[in-house]
Length: 106
Image (tube, rainbow, N blue to C red; front, side, top):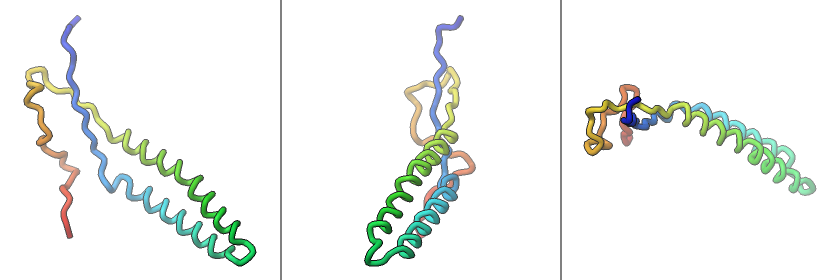
């Protein structure tokens, strides 16, 4: 049995495109709840209108957080490093994967 421990590097490959659909769907849910709130808004039902939007946000937020967390965990990789690589030479300036592009200002 080897007494040497394998060294791993954690790499996150998450991009904005991976969560873009989730954000769009959640925004649609919020806008539908706002439309529902405006539809039942009247002088006698204001409490029901606020309750409607509160219930929608409170019930949909845990699903959004769950979707974000599971998507993030699915994009975390542990890559083993070669034994001859010196751990002191590791830096943040490693090359990016080919699927990622740097952010640019428009």
